[in-house]
Image (spheres, rainbow, N blue to C red):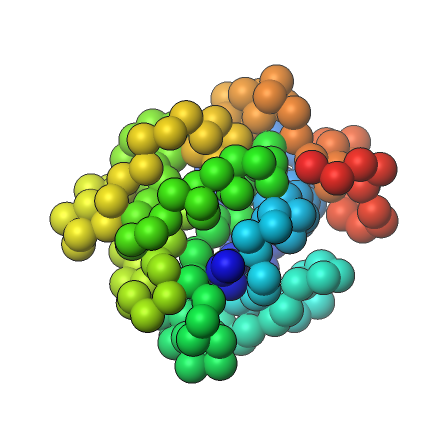
Length: 208
């Protein structure tokens, strides 16, 4: 079983590349992407706890816990501190850091990745250079190294790259083309609402 950490920026600081791509409602989309990723993770039977790491407590959706961002602007520092808090509180749980911009994520893909993680491992993004999820089993330090080229850094740090297909877990959305691919696969309820200009909220009609 795992505790999942999802870092979430305030929407006015998120998805700037998406805005530059000319996609409307990018601030609403940033929150909606996160809420759909969180909903999919919470639906996984392997997820015991989910914590949103953010200074924007008002953006934490129902069902998720909140941990303050103690990274002083550094994502990896924030995740490291959050993982230390959870490891001390729930040492029997593995810990996974999940990116917030995965709106097509399904519980099946996140469950498949977590079921393979008997050692520290990561899921590279669809381009093979970034990381969408980093996983550490109980008693193993998370040691996040997110950012440009993170897949190589995680592998160099000893994390095993998962090679299973996991298409919805690999598709992070930074550009209009990424969003178009996600819509083709099938985005979650909140992203669908945001694409129509509505703020995230309410309950999805079916579990993902």
